[in-house]
Image 1 (cartoon, rainbow, N blue to C red):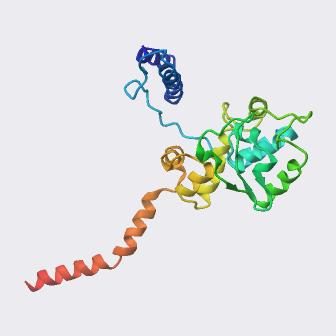
Image 2: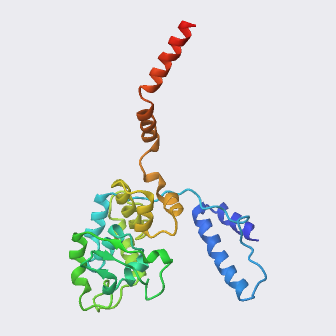
Image 3: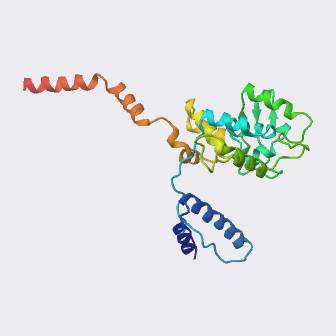
Length: 256
């Protein structure tokens, strides 16, 4: 039944990554059903999984990012900065509290996600360094508030409000994909780190991924092409030695 369901959805043109997400969610529900003794076994397994696909993350340009920022309502602009320069997920940004921001140390340590739920994983609570420019933006938001992101009435902003704002403004930015989401700002953050020369472990910890494999699977294509760098590394060691070896072989052959 699971295979037939996925085959039908696939024939309707749904992407492999979306089918994989649906299968994963169904598997989660079925695991709970097994624990609650509603069913005897989980019908979802590697044999029924459609595979995650190879969709590459879209990385906005700096011009596109700042265009989004200028178009966003003032109450949502800090959220965009938290996504693009801290890599927070939308639920983490909405759940961020003044106590989670250490202005003196210039760090952010997410503790909960909206409204006050546990974080996605233990790794999600890793501390992230932030620059002085962002500290100056966040400093006034840490005074007299329960949460950094609030609406006109001082109420905590919800993820749906931010995503609604993203849908409102994304179509006004040239060449930005139609389905661009707040989560895609994390891809911009990752690209900044990779372009700066950060290795995979650093990027993993800044994005608070559970494993380096997740980081590589998502952003491996953003690292510089390794062909030329490995070729250069090998050439550095071999340069001159092979020529000398070839000369010695020719000399030996002539003498024989």
